[in-house]
Amino acid sequence: MPRKATTKAAAATKATVEETVKTTPVKAEETGKKAPVKKTTTKKTTTTARKTTAKKAVKAVTKKVNLQFAGKDIAMDDIEAKVKATWMEETGKAESEITEIEIYVKPEENAAYYVINGEYVENGRKIEL
Image (cartoon, one colour):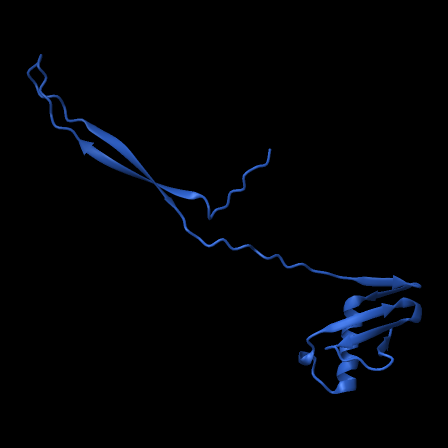
């Protein structure tokens, strides 16, 4: 049986208010004396629902991809950084101008080919791993 998920935002808060009520003296018929004043306490409970906007928390995911071949261990972040540096050197453009990057790793050639911002060149752009 699935459990119902409850959140703090959906939970209702309760406030309890106590009031003291005095009763009027009542004459005792048998003794002729007044009965003592009685104090009674009544509780009133009110429920209010908290209105909040449901926001989902986005968890940051850390990723690390490594390429292992022929006794080498190369992090994909290192390949990406080398591709960006090579592209900036070749074109004279800033890293902030990169909107799209595609990297094709070919371990058998010990190389990675790349395309940045859809700019294709004949025979492709390549870096050595």
